[in-house]
Length: 271
Image 1 (tube, helix red, strand yellow):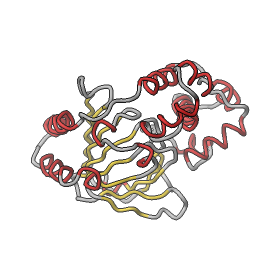
Image 2 (cartoon, one colour; image 1 turned 90 degrees about the vertical axis):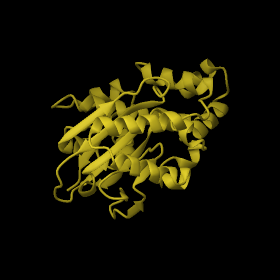
Image 3 (tube, rainbow, N blue to C red; image 1 turned 135 degrees about the vertical axis):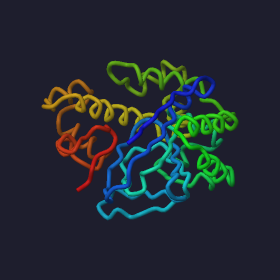
């Protein structure tokens, strides 16, 4: 198994948080639930020219995409099968960071998977072909970084969105949306519209997602979890509120997550 990551230098960073390259020996088919997190992603399947994702709805309806696929800002979990996750690369975009590449309304792409060829045409397939000619992870990451550098020249985020993202990301307790908008110098409605267009979800939904992630990241570090303490520390009204929100974002209960959590915080084995 080999997992190599790279934080790109400016001007790609911080819009592009990291590039990664994953190699593992083929194994048995296994399904994994992918938990939502702030930001969107690009996936390049170098094993086969297809990307498969499944709805996390109990039926696991399969959606088949091209070998290079984009996943917008998600606020719910989805499912992958590990059988095709043998030779894969990816790009982790910061919230709203993919606008520079795609030049699209992020609200239209939220909670959706799309083949990158639907968004960029033949450039996606040409990228995959170029990556297939590289023999090692460092070479592939360099090719991917240069490709992004040439193409990430689109619109930047509105200053109010930048400020709000920074405040939400560093605040010890998540701010009220009305207060957040006032501090950014615009109306609550205007901030919500900008978030929807540039990040992919509205402000309130994004704050809820951040609160969910604080729970996930916090309990990942503890063997025994005091849920009442977690609920209070993360800004929930009580434990039932935490449980409802956790299930809405992850498709599972908090205790089920703790029982199934593994080495990779966003990947949870199913079955």
